[in-house]
Length: 56
Image (cartoon, rainbow, N blue to C red; front, side, top):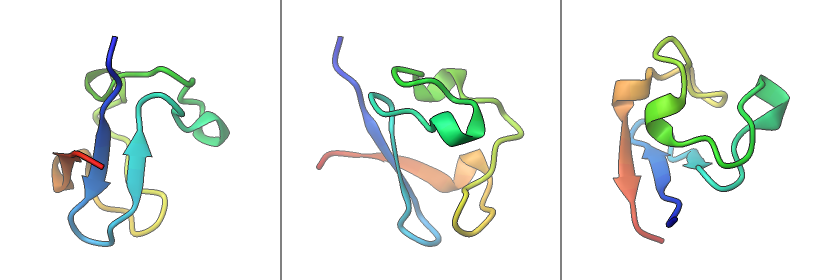
């Protein structure tokens, strides 16, 4: 499986599926589609729809 990376279009914060966000209860390997809809960017509070898949 290939993990993807998503970037906040507002502040540039990056979510990596492979790393997850354990400090917010999102386990490593959590796919973007499985991140809760009410989750917000830890840097700026942007909503999930304000993120875009990026290739790094």
